[in-house]
Image (cartoon, rainbow, N blue to C red; front, side, top):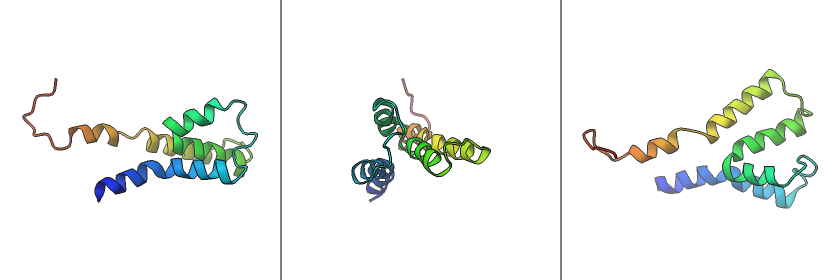
Length: 97
């Protein structure tokens, strides 16, 4: 069950991006190249969603609050929780090479 929760949390932003891409015109005209949305989908999905929110709802104006939101999105995407999962289950005396 915890694995299912982790998988849902991992894929939720990607599912939201896929649904927005297919069912709406949310991404139309925001990017000059298709490369950036694809890279955002793979590596930084929450940051991609926040970037598009700023472009749509805030008119593309980067105020202090929108920058704080961007930093929070980056923290969510580049969380050290991924690194922490490698060490779970090891004993304190284990040697890692």
